[in-house]
Structures are given as C-alpha cells and as structure tokens.
Length: 432
Image (cartoon, rainbow, N blue to C red; front, top):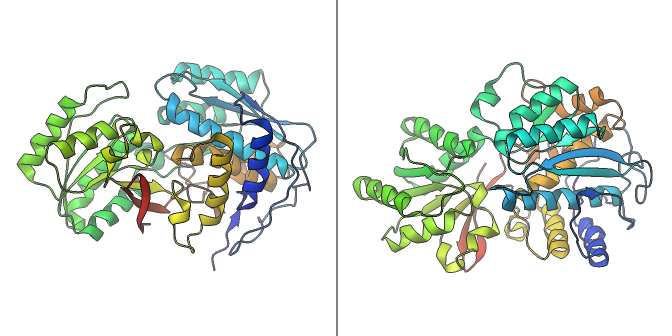
C-alpha cells in the first residue's frame, strides 16, 4: 500500500474544536492563538505516522507563538468565498495548537485584508515579512495574486503555501519556485476529471462557458484540445463575465444561441457559485433539458441562494468531496479526515464547509507538516525544502505531493462528481 500520512485531525477534530467553539462562541478574529483544550489525535486507518522528527508535544501548545502571515480578501469582490477560507484557516490552527503545535509552540496567524486587490496584497505580504517578522506566509486568496506573492517569497527567502490553482504557464515554468508551493488542482487535473465525466456519460457534443477566472478559462481550453483525441467535440463560447455581473440575460442569450444551433448532449457552466444559480435556473426555464455540469467553485452553499429548486439536478465537480463526506465511499482516502473537519466546522460556525474552507485548512496543514519535518520553523530554508519535497499528505482537497521540479500543484486528482437532489449533494462517482 502506498505510504500516506495525515496532518488533519480525523474524527478527533470534532471533539477538540467543536468543544472549543461551544465555549468561545466561534467569534472571528484577525489573529489566532492557542486554545486551551488538550487532545492528541491518533493516526487513522490505512495511514502511517509522518516520516519526520517527532516535534509534536502532548497537550496544547504553550511556547512562543510562531507567526504566520495571511493576506486574505476580507472585503471586495472575493470576500464571500474568502470568508470560508479564513474560517478553514482558523479551525485548523486551533486543532494544531490543541495538539502540541510545532515543538510545543502554537501557530499565530496574522491576517490582513487585501480588499481583493493585488497592490494591497503585495503591500500586506511585504509588511507581514518585513515588519511583523512572520516565519512564513499562507495565501493569498485570489488566484491572480499567487504569482506576485511567490515572487516576494523567493526574493525574501520566506516559505509560502499558496492556494493556487496554478495557470498552465505557471505549471510549465522552469525553474519552478523553490520557496513556495501552490496546492489546489490546476487546469490539467480538472480537465482530466471532466474528460472522464464526459466519457462516462457518453456525451459527444458539449458546449461550455467560463467566467473570467483563469482556472475556468484554461480548463475549458484543454477540453477543446482534448476532444478530438478523446472522442467528443467541446465548443467553448468566447463570451465571459466578471464577478460584478448582475444581469445574466445577455449571457443566457449567448448560451441559448449555441444550444439551439449545436443541440449539445450537455452544457458546462464553469463559473463561480454566485453566478451559477441564475444561469442554471435561467437555462432550465428556457427549455434546456440536457445535463448541466459545474466546477469545484460551485461546490458551495451559495448555489442555494435562489432556493434548492433553482439548482435541482445540477452536476458539480468537487476537489476532494468535502461538501458531503458522509456520502463518499468508505475506502475514500480523505473520508475520515473530512468527516472530522465537517462536523467541527459545522459546530463552530453553524454552517457546512465548502471547497474554500477546505483550501484554507489545507494551507495551514501543509505548512505545519513542513515545519515539523524541518525540525521547527526557524530555519526557513529547511522549511521550504520540506515543502517542495512533501509526499503523500492526506489533506482535505486531496493527497498532496510536490517535487522541486513541480511546486505549483499539490493536488493531482481526488475529484468527486456530485448531483444536487432535494438540496443535498448526492454522489455520482469518484473521478480521478
């Protein structure tokens, strides 16, 4: 069996953090310190302990805090999903600190608002490194902020765990950044999963549209290229829209024009969770009866904003499957960790987690594991080396692997296909 290990808290996480949440009320803060609940998690089934020096003390961490910088989009157009990411960060920090931290030292996250703006994010990261003297940074939230953030990490020799997802150009760049990594599934992984979905359903003729997110645009571009070899035709509409779009009728008109012309077997809406409900409901009301497929960004409670009936039957690709871990097969390698996180998140925040909360938690989990393997946070070069050589870490989005030659994508599979039925995420299949 392939050697794997977990940094996530498995089912014990529920007992640790949910109890803390009840006591503290789950109030959001811009910094996160060690909680007082003492619990140590045991490895789950089919896992082994991390192949690193034993640096986790018993009980809660009480030593000198390890400062970690986080530029998050608390306000601006990315605020809604970024809020989920921030909650995931806080919850994972609480868990790690309750279980000994790093060498008995708690993580302390210093969060600054970048207002969904690149220059502000750059200023934040420089401040965190130069003035706050953080040991490492996580984030920022937005995809388009990753490249400048990684440049700062390289220039200042400060370890960084970025969300991603990487662009195709970033994946192909040589040499790869050596002080930072990016986690989330990139266009190649997502297009591979969608190709498998298309072939499994026997779709031969598909049309699709994407919002302005590069991950959405490039994933559909890869489907267009893959089509002739894989036995299908994918037509990508040239039209797109931003996060400030409120009138979706012009977009619906463009989709319907191609739908009536090409008579596809399926429609792909690779869009954000805010845009999905009006587009999906609009297409159904205009007579579209074929399956409608969405992206991991739509594995989010926001798609129910117009009521569950507005998205009934919607198919969505999810990275890891966190929206409904109870519905995953028992042999799913992420399931035990996801169940614990799901219940703890629900208990602390009164709402279920989503893809973005998983991404936030994974930022912390990956950094913490690298610090443990490096023997602590103080030698930044060792932490960075541990990051770019991290192997088989079972995180919430998937099993994380990096090499020095490939530091821009940690999750290379573990995609799940769901269908919305009666306001529930019902498993269709695990994909890749």
